[in-house]
Each structure stands twice: as structure tokens, then as C-alpha cells.
Image 1: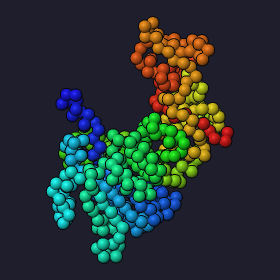
Image 2: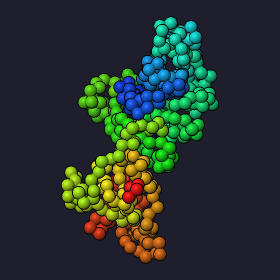
Image 3: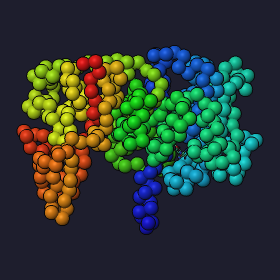
Image 4: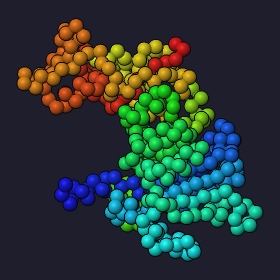
Length: 397
Ligand SMILES: C[S@@+](CC[C@H](N)C(=O)[O-])C[C@H]1O[C@@H](n2cnc3c(N)ncnc32)[C@H](O)[C@@H]1O
């Protein structure tokens, strides 16, 4: 890989951005509203969190008594590992130079562990100023045996993990069968490692900031796309901030929103009164190669349709498992029609299981790709490929 390509790859996987305190506060409040004891007597682990930058550590430290926590553990990734991974996009921590345990070499090569259990400064309250810290043996990689032990000790894991390792992070949390609350992007729900967990309701979308832009703080000098910086500024954050579209929380902590049913209109009312002109003009288009209808807007899901409906991923932010069942991920769902591409003959054809060809079209890359997804039947003709769909079915029809 040439220097330029390598640089682009490193830039693309830059995970160095920090969650705002207010987002954490909002989300945690929603769990407390549902069950005030959600965090009581629990050990919380924030495994990608240097308290100098991480508002997760700050939040749980400052609210230690209010939440009734038993212990807070926060671990950070070494400066060297960050530098290796992100080149200049890492934040150098300077706070530790003031402590007796400061070690010039370890400060670069080791991760750190911060714990909070008691009032060490006799202030009569347990808070941020009572955090105790030491160097880890290794670099603080969440996959290391050292941090795995801390994971196993914890009851709830809460963080914004590195997006480039999101799949590994979720697997790491689930293999230990822990409660968790983490930030990602709604599209990650369709990753083939994650979707089955959502389908089995072993994990779901959180309460706030779902399917929207979230603003994050970035280190001084970080490369942020001009449009992201401007968008963050329009959202009220001027300076070292960026934004991530379609952000959301993923969790397996219970909350009230997932018990509230979506309020929906019947199909006939939608066809007459929907605010979406496409529904009024085209109706609900059936898929060409799957037995179901396309519902391009979550608020246009008909309340009385009993078959399978393909809905946008943003549905997950409104999903109540008692109201709907998640049947499959549209992209990977087995199709009613077989899609065969004959490059040498220059055609793509769709066959029924008995081999009857129901549609042929010239071979092009876009047609070939489209054949792997669900296609719409517009006025009896194959139409364009809709965005990723989740296939759902009404419960208790
Ligand atoms: C998206 S940032 C979020 C930081 C912090 N959790 C917050 O929300 O403000 C992810 C952090 O994970 C760190 N990180 C990257 N790879 C890691 C690894 N393998 N183990 C632990 N931390 C890692 C990055 O250096 C970065 O600080």
C-alpha cells in the first residue's frame, strides 16, 4: 500500500472523537425514568475512556452516589497504541505528570485504569476527585486479557467504542453476557454479526439521539470535514467538533420507549390521508423477488397489514417487540425468485424454484447488485432497489 493510500486508510478509521456529557445525561435519565434502580449496586466499566477526555467517566463519577453505584472502572488506551493507529489523531494526556506514580516511559506505552469506590479526600461525598489510578500492565486494548478480566468483573459496560472495531466490541460484550449501553450508528444494526442479536431481542436501540446527527468533540488539530464542522456549528457547537450522521445508542438495558406502541393508521387511511405523496400516488409496492410489500416510511406502516413489510432501518428506533416481530434483514433474506447472472450471455434472469424464467434483463453491474436486494415492482415492471430494509410482521394480527 502506498503512503497516500495508507494515510487515507488511517484517516478513514479515525476513532478519536468524544461524546458530549449532555447526550450521556439524557440517555441515562431515560433508564432511570423507567427503573430508578437500573444502576444501583452495579459495577460500571467504561473500557475506552480516559477520564481526561471521556465524559462517560466524568458522568458516572459525578453521579456515583445518585445512581447508587458500587464501583466505577474506567480504562484508557496507551498513547503509543493510539499514535500507531491514528497517526496524529490522538490526544496526549498530561494530567498524570502531577502524580507520584507518574512514569515517563509507562505514560507512553501503558494504558491506565481508574477506579472509584470510596471517598478518599474526605469531602463527605464520592465523586470525580476520588478517582484512583495506576498503569495497566498492557496498552489497555479492550481485547487484552487484562481488560477482559475487568469486563468480567463489571455488571454494565457503557461507552462510545471505536467505530472501526464496533463488531469486535459487541462480540466482546456479548460473549461475557453483560449488560451494555454503547454508541454506534443505526446502519450497524444490519451488520451480519449484529442483526441476529437484534432479531432475537438480545440487543436493541436506546432511547435518545436515535437515527440523527450527534455532535462529538475532537482533539485540537484533528482533520474534520468542512461540512461536518459546519454542521456541528449549526447545531450550536463551534470549534473542535464534528458530527456523525445516523447515530444511535445500542443496549440491552430495558427502557420505556420500547414498550410504547407506535401509533399507526390503517392501510386504507394511509392510502387516502398519508402525508407522503408517494403512498397516495403509488400505494404499497410489492417486492419483485420476495413475498412482501415495501413501506418506505416508518410513520406509514399500516396498522392492519398481516403480511411481511420491508421498512427502513430507522424503524429500530421505534421498535416495540410486542407490536412487531423482526423477520429478517432485507439484504440477506432468502428471495422467492432465484437470481442468475449469465455474464457470457450478457443477461440476468429471475427464475421461480421450478426453473420458469419470469424476467430477463441485460447484464450490468447495477442490475447484478440489484438482484441481490429486494426489488420493487412498479406498475408490473421491475423498479429500482430500495435502501436497506428490515422485514417485519405485525404480532397478534
Ligand atoms: C469514539 S472514541 C470515544 C472515546 C470515549 N469513549 C468517549 O465517548 O468520549 C473511541 C476511543 O477508543 C479508543 N480505542 C481505539 N481502539 C481501542 C482498543 N483496541 N481498546 C481500547 N480503546 C481503544 C480510541 O483511542 C478512542 O479514544
